[in-house]
Length: 531
Image (cartoon, rainbow, N blue to C red; front, side):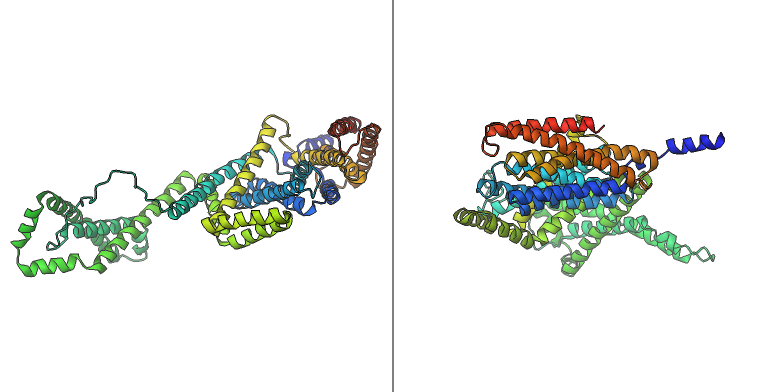
């Protein structure tokens, strides 16, 4: 009895992360989606355009998968943020090319709806193997992509605005009533050595150096615990004490600058009272370019060291993992910008080459002339970054729509890959049939939708009971045959019922609506019978 109890507990305590369809069923579902979508795209003559769009949809699924990675989470976020604009750009370009082909008469009117359905099916197919498209992963991917898109838009808008300002020769403060000559804060007195500003700059640089040495583990490195000789530490402490006394230089420098501003000519007269050799010596010392360059660099570097050390310590004490996600978003955005900037030639040449082949002769010439004018005006780098930002917007909107679908329970919060893939196949098959696609392609997509949906629904239960890696091919084979048979019979019945109407399917909108309604009824019947 004890053994039976332990076996029952082992079965019922399978981790929920393992409640996924077995691998054989997942592989079959992905294959069905790929073949059905390719047949429909080929039948409508838009294989190239829909291939680009589907790769974009698959890339967005990869972004969701990267966001779901627990180890290393920061690297997954970084790569997801960097891949998002590329995937969104491919999705936008593929659907755009499909719409152009439709408007130019190279494809049937309404082909873009088939394209959207194919993209949805492609997203679901890529999400099937790892079952990563759950509520938490989609939320994380949406949030990071939205933040990255804001950064991309800010950079692109800044560069575009700067280009417009330079082209139009706009002055930043042209409309402000500024005086012809702005008074200087420190009056020009060439005969007087700038002792005050030099003392202030040099003293601040030395104080910043003292703070940097205190922030760095210099004392710990000088502490030789193997012996009793602590002379090095004493000298370091004496150096810190000496550097600390330069505070008096800051005070004197501020007083001298204040006196120079307030006294004006009287300040110059005070310097006349000093011996000329002293004035010349101080003037040469305080105006030496090398000393001012050295003091400025020392001040900047020391301040950067102090800020970085304190930031690292704060992140360490607060838990650096809490902030790695934000750092990864910034780094991923910078990586996407760098790729767009350095790869602008490849991006623009690919875009222009595809437009040249997609558009009809005269229209293509006009559009390409306008595009060349835009590139010449804004430069190729800025245009490429604008396209990267557009890709980020497309990816963010796609993920936001998916998240809203999960929020309103239109899309399941878990195991959504099969559901999205079957919904995409259903839409592609229905719209394809309405547009006059060959019956084998449209009917195959509808049957594939039933099979993929059933593989996911039944596969989750099977994975929960026996695990993903358990041998279950015979059971899945029987299940697939049953679902395919029921789906084929009911979908064929629906298509046959509509084909008996006296209205031409491929030309009249009423027949298209009737066809889609019949296909929907057929699918619902398939789902009920497949339970």
